[in-house]
Length: 225
Image (tube, rainbow, N blue to C red; front, side, top):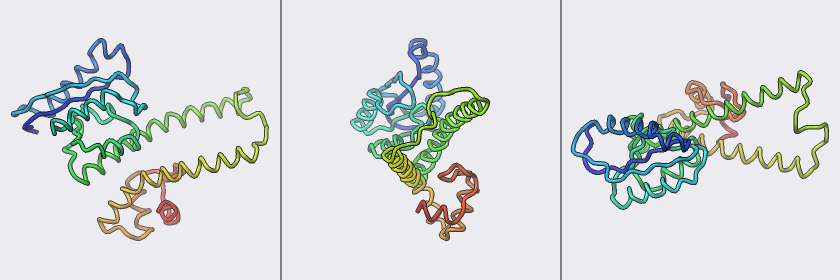
């Protein structure tokens, strides 16, 4: 692309070692430069965060957003996973009143761009969940082999614990429904209206059901809606 005007750049590295060496940051700077691809532009401010991608308290990002708003300049990030792996955090960011660009994505503009960004973050979040699931599966296999693990010792949960568990499941279901709302809205706007066709479209897109299955049914779509 050929860019015009001013930009604010945000870089993030996961460890202090990466930050001190500059290796991770330099690679991100190069990615941003390739994205801007010449033209009459300048980076008016750069902000570097040394923080895990799972955390949403980012003081340097807050400063970068403030600078972008003050200068009415886009915020440029090398890769979407350098910013966040949380759909909820990304949704808050999209409401920050700043034009956010990613060097590893096409131009992110308008409702379509926002939708693409949310879906890519959802994929990153799914990958993190799969890692957690594999860890749990390994622990379950060890327990099946007779290895004593922490946690369940055969004690029946109290009524309060059972109620807390139900509340947690309901909260997860509500959050999942909120994540899927823009996807379903986009499908409906393109003419996919019936529950059966929505289920087929979600399956074709490879979006897991709330229970992690790969194939959607009309009843599951109805529950999410």
